[in-house]
Amino acid sequence: MLDVHAPEHTPHSLRDFFLHIFTITIGLLIALGLEAAVEWQHHVHLRHEADENILSEIRDNQREIAEVLGKIPGERQTLSTALAFLKAHAAGKDLDVKSINLGMNFGSYWDASWQTANATGALGYMEYAHVKRYSGVYTLQGQFTQIQTQTLSAYLQIQSYVVAGEDPRQLSMADTQKANAEVRQTLTDLLAMEEVGQALQKQYELVLKAE
Image (cartoon, rainbow, N blue to C red):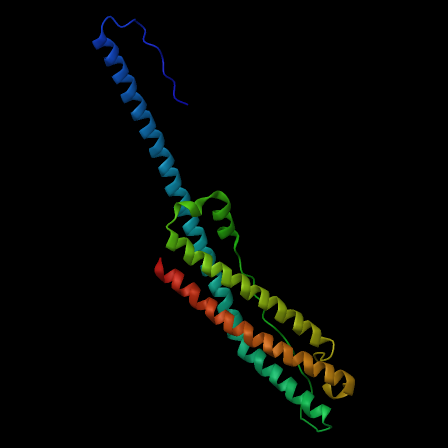
């Protein structure tokens, strides 16, 4: 708060009066300038801190998704093998498969720094193009997380039909038909997860390269 005090002595002339007004005005302008400079410095610090935290978060997420995407070809092959067996088993044909071991590499992707920057108003001090890049990445990341959760749910569903370590040839025809549909759905979800994940990985790279 800025305090303006009355003069200690009554002005004796018009010149003294205007000199006093001028002195007050200059003092107020200096005080307001200093206050604005401090506030601006605070905004700059807030923006830089938010930038550093978001970029660090994106790097962590980039490493996480690279690991997940690296395991998908193997998971896709396992599902294809399971599907081939189920089709043969349903047709009464023999396929040399003694066990079907299903697994999925599940990643965790963070957005705490992005949410914090939004809550503290730090995004308001960034350039629009800057914020737009971040927003695009986190929106796509949210979509990928949803697909990943959906795919994991499908995996858990087929676990009730295809149990790791057990002879799949013991499956009943009814369970074989159900498992066939579940494996097809899981394979579809996994392919969608891979496509979105690859797009997200490119977005991570573009954002990090632009900084």
